[in-house]
Length: 379
Image (cartoon, rainbow, N blue to C red; front, side, top):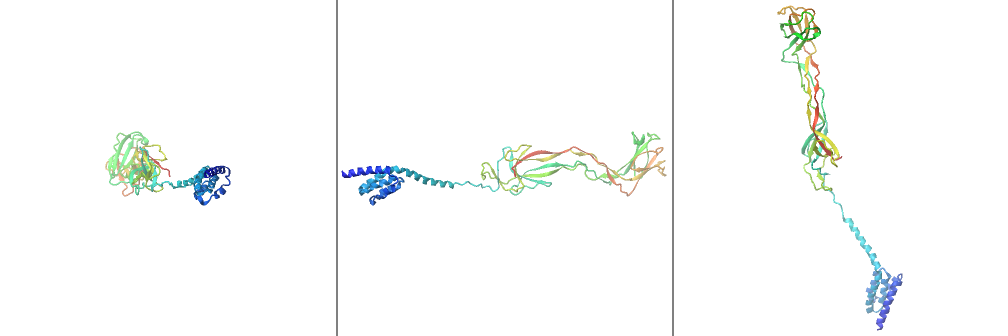
């Protein structure tokens, strides 16, 4: 009975001490005896003084001290200290640093896939004023040869030289009026050494004029067609040997082989188009050209006399009648009456000094056709 009474009083003391003396917690904890080490441990666990007071109960006998452990239960009031333990759990957040972003496996360049109606990506290799670079290395497949900057000469060639293997002749044309005006009333073609009647029966006796031309002394040397147009820029579009679709960070990008810094990665589409992003560098190139240019005839002639024509009274062309014509000869009026017979004599062994008599003219034009739009990644 007394034991029971003492126990009850002890419990009452514990309850009161836990609520009133929070600042003396350490003193209460040390009051416990070694009879019940477990109870003393209970007091240390709580950061609150109430738990320490529970240790006071342990001052009773050993058996009762065990019960005192129950008193420690009363120290639940110090549970607030357990909340502090939660801060230790926060340390676990360090584990968050374990995550790491994966790096791309593409050894070349990652390029976005083109729209379905575009071709590529492909490499554009250009040269100015020179042939287009060949497709080789990691981009060995030739897709298309394209060009830009079509230029052409707007003059026609006309070069002359001394003719060989041709019949050389002088042509005399007689006009009914002075100054070689009006229609011709007679003509005569004379080869070297020939003597022929003028045959001008339809011409007036007085007031006629004449002109002498040559033929067969000069010939055109070289082409007479216009030279072909020339491209200022020549380019080759080259496809890669392999494309790897799953080695880029961005889904859908294509891994292309490395390439020289001066070359461009492009997509292509026939015609003149706008560029889809991010292929924002727009280039229009052409596959061919259309040339409708033509040149008028190249006319060659002599720049010096190649012979003379003498006038005679008879068809024997013996003694000269006194009148001479140079070959060639611009228009002159007959002095009094026309001669009856003419004889042509060349200047053997002399250079006729051939040249173009008039520059040929060009008509038509050359135009670039079959355009292709190339849209490239900016460098």
